[in-house]
Length: 170
Image (cartoon, rainbow, N blue to C red; front, top):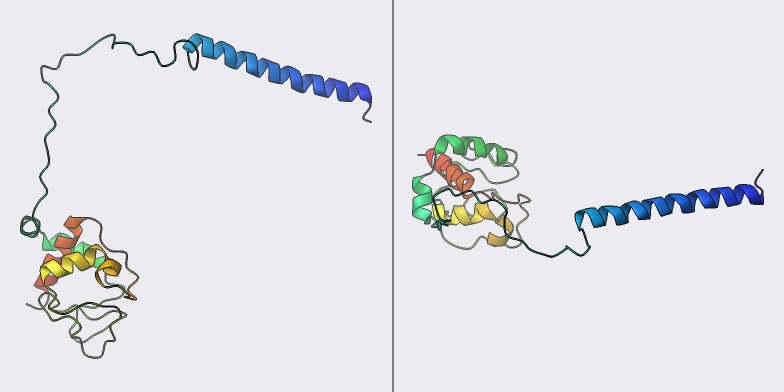
């Protein structure tokens, strides 16, 4: 049964707990100067370790596309190929969801017979540079494509995959 005295005890307990919480917060702020008088005061570092070197920031030069292709590893590209295997095949003439990729490097775009391309791949050949741009973001390279692959974000994966594809159909 809930009477006035029980309600008063419950309300007093809640208010007492809140008061203890607020007092504890205030004491902690005073002890550690969080939000108190010392907050925002900046002091010198108490102890400095001299390493004998000044901080030197070296600029990392961006590699050219030729340098990236020179560092390509076809063996690692074969592992990256696993991401493509679900939709593409390496056997000549065997289309999957996507066109076959046998001899794709330096092959003309839109040239696989019996495959209906979507999107605007443009004219020309699948040069390593074009493949590099396409593999980075198929939707940006070929607007309107139905290819759902998001692309390979690491440049190492792209050049390794292209190096592997160059070995297929030589």
